[in-house]
Length: 211
Ligand SMILES: NC(=O)c1ccc[n+]([C@@H]2O[C@H](COP(=O)([O-])OP(=O)(O)OC[C@H]3O[C@@H](n4cnc5c(N)ncnc54)[C@H](OP(=O)(O)O)[C@@H]3O)[C@@H](O)[C@H]2O)c1
Image (cartoon, rainbow, N blue to C red; front, side, top):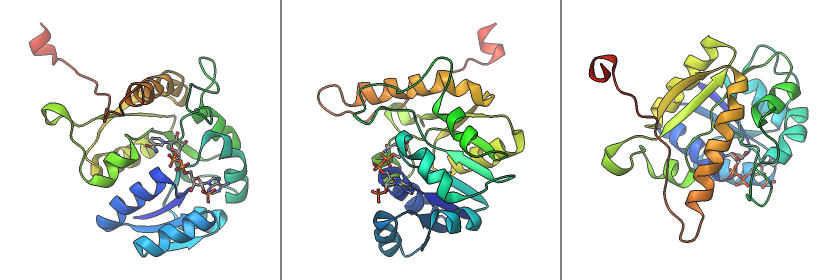
């Protein structure tokens, strides 16, 4: 699959590295950091618009404060699958910039009219970069998948599975209002004091066991 990754920071490069290793074709979009990442990983690089046109899936991995310019540069994404990895964090990571009646995911969708937006905030970039994800008791971390296009969600769930994570469809894009605070919780646990390598996991009891 062709993956166009807009934003080649910690997360974008970790995803690019893993997906390049598993045989996907990668293009990074952005400025100097995209150039550097492309050279290091020996993949393509282009403008945001070229990257958006390249990808069967366009992955948005920029800070929340950069979604406006990044998507404006990307041009029309109408009909395209757009995986938003963005959490609506404040620039200093002390909390969420918006929430409860809005989400980063919905702000992305507003700036990409007609795109098939799927919001799925991945686990921490450093963990993704190390290889298949597993935490205590060999559990894979859950990635909560939100969106209004079921077929697009299945595509992103497959990509999440490839990382070794555990995708869970939590419904429409507005469910991101609940997911983004949960992922902020993971950030605050991870960086309160000594940095910790944490992920969130949804546990389910089967109906037979629960009876
Ligand atoms: N890091 C994680 O563990 C993690 C995990 C889950 C979700 N996320 C989410 O992923 C997003 C990125 O996080 P990050 O940690 O990777 O951030 P980061 O390391 O600060 O990287 C951000 C990247 O976005 C690029 N960028 C900024 N404006 C851009 C634009 N207009 N067009 C193209 N590229 C642009 C930057 O390029 P320049 O440096 O060249 O300006 C940089 O490469 C955030 O929304 C975050 O909430 C991150």
